Length: 166
Image (tube, rainbow, N blue to C red; front, side, top):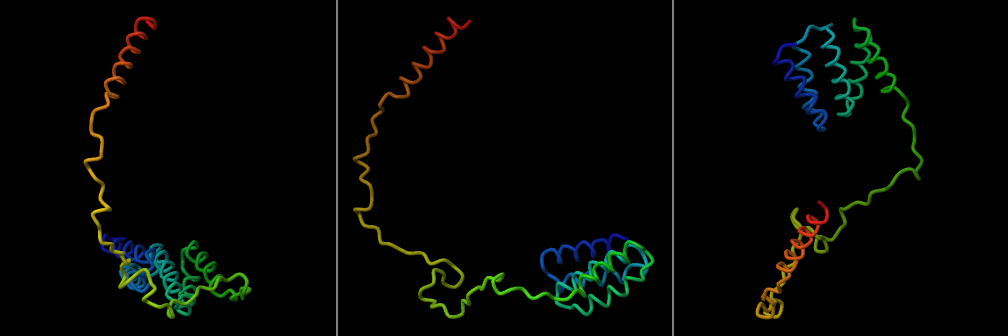
């Protein structure tokens, strides 16, 4: 695979993994166009394309491509296509109602009661009164000598330890 084709493929995978399925389909199709039709690399890219079709609600295209890939000359590609086709064609099972959690609609909410306005959180503003401010003249700023006492006791401890510990 040449560099340009490799970049197309990697970009398609990145788009797929980020949920940009339409873009990934475009990149995968362009990648496949640059590869020999029955190469191992072409099969790999087309399997990614099947997943992108499925993720983009294009199930019929995914199934048709899987059927085509089942005749691919590389056994690993045809086996993976067969497994993927089995999953795609499996019957859809009904889920019991009690397994589902219903998410309420946000359409009927009153915007005036919302915490958010135009995508930003409402900020409550409050006028500051002089009583809300702390009186800086009441704060004790005189040194209480704690630091000097702590350093002195530490020095005495280290000296005593040095004399008796050594």
